[in-house]
Amino acid sequence: MKDLRKAVFPLAGHGTRFLPMTKASPKEMLPLVDKPVVQYTVEEAVASGVSQIIMVTGRGKRAIEDHFDISYELEDVLREKGKMKLLEDIRRISFMAEVVYTRQKESLGLGHAVLCARNLVGEEPFAVALADEVIDASCPALAQLLDVAREFDAPVIGVQEVPPGEVSHYGIIRGQEIREGLFRVDSLVEKPRVEEAPSRWAVIGRYILTPDIFSILENQKPGVGGEIQLTDALVTLASHRPVYAVRIEGRRYDTGDKGGFLRATVRYGLKNPELGPDFRKFLVELLEHPEEV
Ligand code: UTP
Image (tube, rainbow, N blue to C red):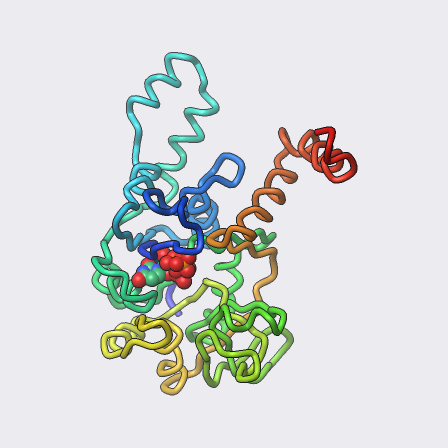
């Protein structure tokens, strides 16, 4: 597999699980302490060697474009006030990768969103990252996938094991474990009922794909929820060529879910070197003396 240069970020969903917050603002701009969720995932992609981010956006997602753009007025203000560290931080956001945009005009599903990036991807392998799945890992999650993609010269899907009660929220793989945490994928099922799930290994929003997926997506019929599902296209891909799944090491937070967002906020708050110690004290007091804090 050639070097991985591009990552597609499908950002055109409606975010219904986070309404009403998502009525006019993208869920990917929710802050984890002081950075929006999408920045964590862009940083993961860049740390994995990606140099071009292809964002597939939709209505109401302009704030994401502004976040990765240069903000001259703000930079001038910070420079005048001598806030050089902040200035450096916000300039870094605009230059960490080349970010290009395309729009998905109708929310026809994740598979369709990926297909919208076809011309921008061209004929090379590419990553797909669901920005609201934030993964806190010592080795960036996409880099973990890339190691396997290089070893087998094949598409790779990131998975984690979920409790039986949660399989119906995910795409679930069926496959053989060929070494610890590495699977050769036979098939996948999107959001199966627990009694029909072929395993508990859930697809968690990180993929390395090859451009042959596009002709499959082009002909993909709507699946679960009436949407063009990436999972269904991967089933076809896995019947044509070897596809692998690898267990992602790291803590994953589904920040598109209210509970997942709260957990991520607490975790990143505690990890923050400036805020963490006080925040920890606050949480302990809150749990021990809820009436007093
Ligand atoms: P989700 O299933 O999380 O859907 O999509 P959603 O609309 O964002 O959120 P809920 O479930 O309604 O709360 C998975 C990913 O696919 C993108 C979403 O932006 C998200 O990153 N997506 C989904 C698209 O880009 N286009 C679509 O038509 C559907």
